[in-house]
Image 1: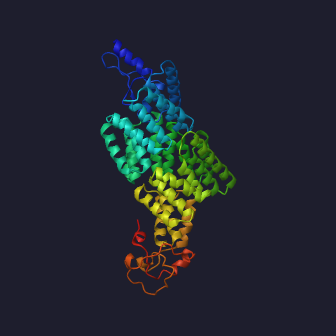
Image 2 (image 1 turned 45 degrees about the horizontal axis):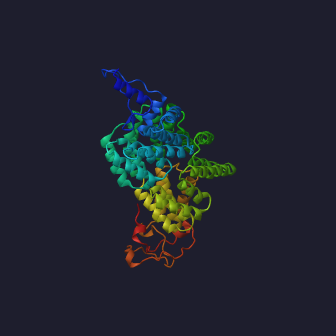
Image 3 (image 1 turned 60 degrees about the vertical axis):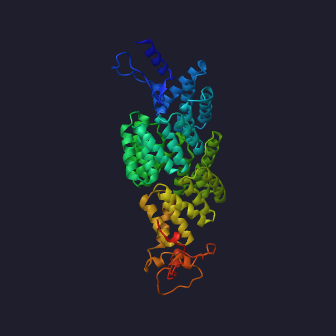
Length: 510
């Protein structure tokens, strides 16, 4: 072996040679032999560098090796970047938020050691910010990484995640175009599928994510791909299909804890409540995320097990506090919880600040729902409508919009969107589904008479027997602050014989 090649091999195995974010091992003289098989640390480095999931034992091996190496070579900026990125990956896999301060310290040490020309550290900081749900910071670090190394494809996945978290679909699309020009394979297809899903292109998203799962080689990466395909099936209201993918993901990697929570959702939808509770408890034991505690608490509540539900809600609050100590932003999850189970006014305050930071469709929907729950349905409806217009096709979004419209007296639109929620996913929430079904039953079938009877009349207008053509909104502007009579949908249906004097923007249906 030539001395120069030997030095490269030694440096690669030690973790100090990373090109394009992926571990590179050169073959011996001749170039025909296959490169040596990667050990646990090498496999983890290859995965972390490519933005792919790594197995937990491999991550532990990589972290231990890099820590030992850096004690002897504290000026190795690339090893600091590798170590920080490995901490991020382990924090994401385990929901152990204590990994994130360690990651930040390692990545910033890398930048101090080499302030310029260090896209590995910048990409790691972008991934860390995404893991903390700080998408503004993720955008800053991701854009810096791309400016330093525009041809390095591994910087783009973190940047796409940041743009998606900020609700900037246009920028996410442009970053995806750049990524697809520079790279291919499972990691690129995964981001492609995620962008397509956010656009509402479900068939295209399913094709891309299915291909990503098929191309994945490492068990952890394959499990993550199968899980994402299962999530699409769940969002389509196909729990049996979703369960099949979750089980396949766990067969590939038993440590893939999101698939355990996915199994909980699917099993609950199939009426297997005992199995669903077991799956959720297993997921929380291994990866105690606040959103899992909220889902399990609502499942307990739907089963009339309220003390158990309260215990999960207490766990949610505790996990949010622990995450905050590690720099993790869980304001959206906590705000949704408060809107439905706690203090709606506090939820509005919390989610208003979050929406200013991260104006994504999911945050818009959460804030809109909290506004409705606190008594400001008209302001809430604007935000929930925006979420439906800008975001993916979501049963929860449609349910929130339909419920707000029902409370405002827009019965035709409420009937349409509540029905849409149940068509998109008849199992979207163990608490929301019964509410949607009961509301639709109360609303009944649309009355005869055409569009003039779709909405409730203004309070000051007396019923008519004839149904003239609807006048333009400008002819009869409605005063938004007028109080509405507190009547049931069935009572209001008897008063729908007038021409509704409502703004055109509210009467048009999505």
